[in-house]
Amino acid sequence: MPRTPPAPSSTPYWLYLLECEGGVYYVGIAIDVERRFFQHLFGVGAKFTRARPPVRVLAAREYANKGAALRAELQVKSLPRARKLAFFAEAGAVLAE
Image 1 (cartoon, one colour):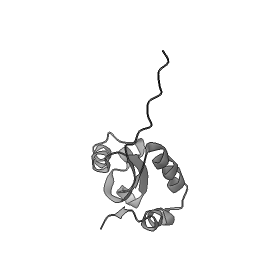
Image 2 (cartoon, one colour):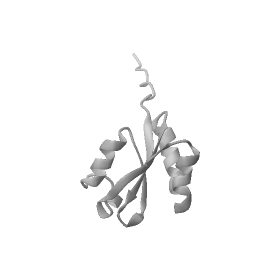
Image 3 (cartoon, rainbow, N blue to C red):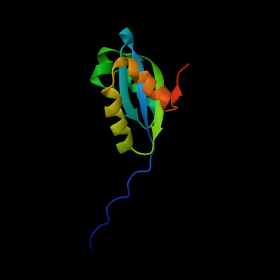
Image 4 (cartoon, helix red, strand yellow):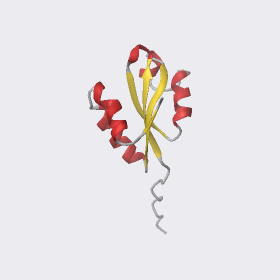
């Protein structure tokens, strides 16, 4: 009997923007942004953030699924630095105070 493929994940993903040491930005996706921030902070995140630990989460925006979040991540990573934070602001994302 053939198996049916698994249903697409309906778990929402977040696109987030970190400010790291030296004032550089890091963009990533996660299901739980706070948990992922602490992973980066304690050196178990991306190679980039092991070299430049995060200072704070600047913004986060929710997406319906992982695919949508990955597409948005690629889009933001292609933007110049000055436009990254504006991308989140224009989208009505959650911005840090």
